[in-house]
Each structure stands twice: as C-alpha cells, then as structure tokens.
Image (cartoon, rainbow, N blue to C red; front, side, top):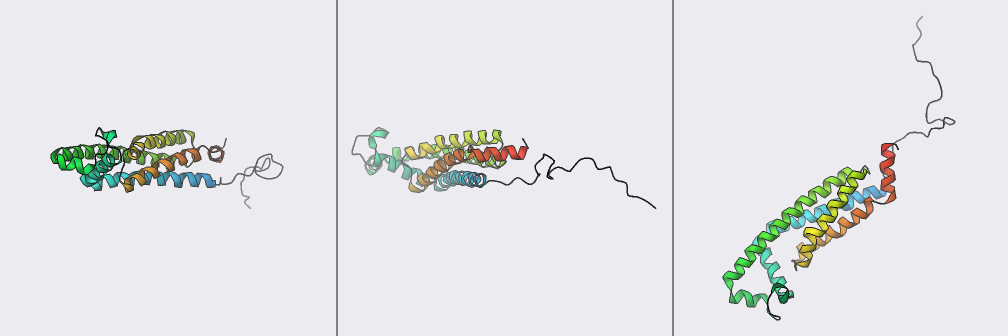
Length: 196
C-alpha cells in the first residue's frame, strides 16, 4: 500500500482567521487610476491631433494664423494700430508669402515637438497605471512641458479655431492628469501592488 508523500503541515495557511495575515487577493484598480489614464490619453490625443492639423493644414493654416495675428493685434507684430492682414498682403504680396512660409516652418517645428511630447505623455501614462512614483513624476514633467511649450504658444499666437481647441484641450487635460496622478488613492494603489 502506498501513501501519498506530502510535506507535514505546520502552522495555518495565510489568510485564514487567526493567522494574523490578511487574505491576499488581487488588488483592485481605483476609479481615479482609470480616470487618470483616460484623461492623460485624451490629452496626448489632443496634442497629436493638433500636430496633425498643422501638418495637413500646411501653408494655408499658416496663412490663416498670420492673418488672425495681424487682425487681432497689429501692434503685437510690429504694425501700426488699425492695420489689417488684407492691407499688408495687398501692399507686399511677396513679403507676405515670406512671412507665411517662415511661420509655417515655426508651426511645423512646434507640431513636431507637440507630437513627441504627446507620445511621451501617453507612454508614461501606461507606466503610471501601476502607481509607480517614477512614472508619475515623468508623466507630470512631460505633461507640464507639453502644456507650457508648445501649446501655450499656440494659444498666444491667435491660432485658427481647430488648432486653438486642440491645444487648449491638451493643456487642460494634461494638467488635470497631473493632479489626478498625485491623489492619494493612486499612491495607495501603487503601494498595494508593490506589497508594501
């Protein structure tokens, strides 16, 4: 007759009453972590869509942006008060084209930076979903960088409506994501996952 060989049982299994150890189960992701992820991804998408608008809009979008800037505040671009974009364009057609081409280059450079920052924000959001402090720090840094540059510059430059809206969305959602990632439930969730 054979007897099953098992190790002798000593003590009580963890998680049972009287052991002094809580039952170990899966750690539930708090709603704030899900909200942080959603808001961060929306912020990154908003920044990326704004960059794509610049790439697709090209010279026409740059022309509209320059016209908006001149019409809204000619003194800010070094022109006499009351000057309109039509006045400048009519008097100096080739100079206008040069200004628009230069501005298109500036907008493209900013769009590239916005796209890189949007990818970084989305990437660090994925790492921050575990509540890791290093990921939340990097998410905060890149979200604030994206808000300050280039999106604040877009808002300042009398951008066309679509570009203005995507930049505003990237700023507001990015800053909201920073706030959400530092709320106590997110930190507690990270600690629970690490088991400390």
